[in-house]
Length: 342
Image (cartoon, rainbow, N blue to C red; front, side):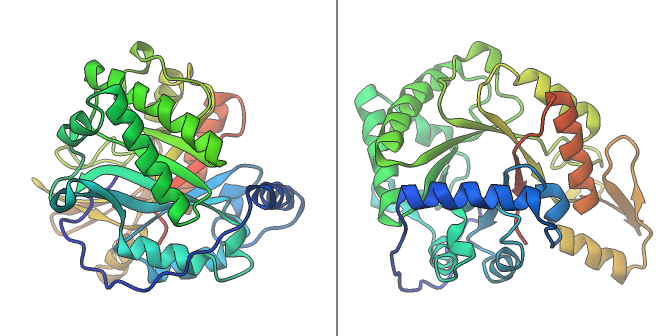
């Protein structure tokens, strides 16, 4: 998942906390799913969301345009991940929700259509000055009592803002089996607390996770990231290709409740310089330089060239092709999460 910027300077706005009962939420979600399969949905995400659960992440540094998109696509979106809640090292690593996330979450509860969408608080292992810190996790999960204390803190913050679910996106653990062991203690404690509080729980996993060596508990939904095959530190290429997607399904098939995350946009490669681009930014580059975009047969992604640059990116067609590949490899329609809403 994209690195969090090293600053948190989004203007703070006042909060109004609201919400709905879990019973009402469940009924609305069921009705919404039935509507998606029985009516002709409209919007850019209509084809991708048809007959499947569709989740989309929003980020705290980009709020206004995504909010417009959520309103437009509300009939196609089942849940939104509010990215992010992270840690303040200046306040003894207190967990807090970013101001932009607070703003968007508040806005989602202001309209009849968007208030029906499930809202997850996405927790990441970042501080104000460090991204994807495993040292932070070693501290938070150092013992069983600390892991339970951390789980309690996460649930308390989710309840404070009336989220309907919690999502844990702790990255860069990779093959650190000792830390995974501590994480599992935390996950079990968190699942017990979220279940008691009536909150859904999602656990985000990176492709390198040694899942065959880790006994993940049943209950939470596991979301496998299917992107960044190419990017920072690699040769030019797409965020995913068909071979990578099929391998990912095979590698994580032992997990119970599983869904997959795809990413729109891509990267602008120029020698050793690599810049992340959103889908809309890629289209602006295409228009500015009058470049021709070609669809790659091995990935379904688009690429274009201008000057010494090569831009690889995913559009809506790419996402649909990737989702179909995951469906076929899984033998069923799978839930899809999109990084990120624009």
